[in-house]
Length: 122
Image 1: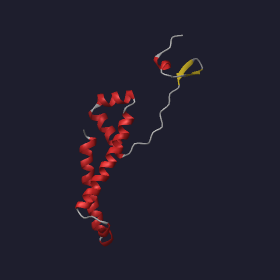
Image 2: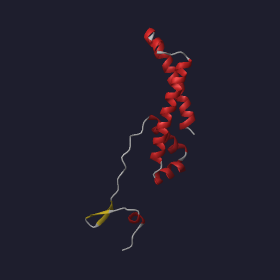
Image 3: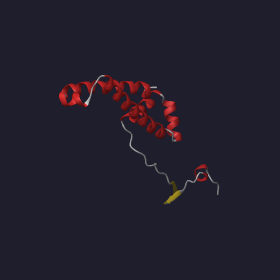
Image 4: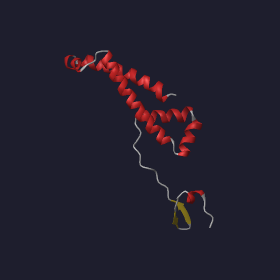
């Protein structure tokens, strides 16, 4: 019997009636978060060849997981630095909650824009 590439790489089949069905499974992985989904959408819409290549070679999930991690770390760092620079502290939160929320929302929005332009839309 001729062995195909699937079998050479350790693939197996299951006989269902008169047909051999490859035993395929999807590896367990963490679901993508906000950043990974945004990157996936951007690649699919603007870099179709790269998206297809990574999807077919199995590199897409690895890339998206790494992007998710990198974006989250960068977002946290930028947020912390901006809050420190703008004196948005727990003291402000205790004294004037609405002002703290207003300032933190502004910081989060600016940090998100930075992360999007540095890591997602490239």
